Length: 335
Image (tube, rainbow, N blue to C red; front, side, top):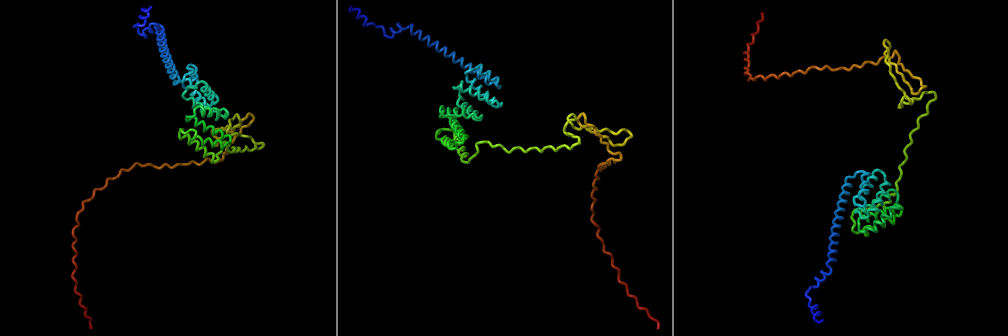
């Protein structure tokens, strides 16, 4: 007994080897399960990536409502399916199918809460409901944005929309309180959004109308004059079957006067034709002669004469003055 206990006390086998020997099978099974789990995770991750890639390609190629519906059905639950719902709502709104557009956004909100544009879609849905006059359905959406996304710019915009609803109900004081509190409630909001609150406060102070006013009615068109009894009624802008006038100009027969015969045929089966014949002695319109100016051929210009050679004039000699003649002697008179 003492030898056995002594040999057991001095057993040189390490404890970890004993643990490995006793739990080897269990550890082997655990390692196998870990390997299988990693493989399954890798396959699922790869498969999801391939599905997301295919869904994204299908969404990029879709351009009509029918194509988007096909993406939504074939790739249900994917991000591409949610994006297809958003694009479908936008197309339907542009086609003036506003109720169907709102239904598409409601489906998105119900099925795609993990979509990156979920908060923006809530704001868009509330704005569309408000534009359709469904203020009771728009208000909970804005309040939900303020409570669930308090640190986003979308929540600040939703707060402004809540103020707009109060202003439309005539509660100007409550609306002004919301507008003035946006900067305090959402300190990190973009300045453009905060400026909208200030602008709305100024609008309230200016007492701007919140309801559309109809314009003045259109002036009534003057009534047509009553027809004269006994006179035939002609419609100049109508066809012959509806009572119009069909004029016919017949040339004069050979040997007759040069005046043509004009037939006016009123519309209707019982209307008698009217013949208008100008008088035979009516002078013919004078012929208008248009003088045609004669066109003469252009005359070629004569060449300019060459300048004559200039010579210096000869000096003129002064004429000789005649010598003075002697005066005649006076004649002698006889005694």
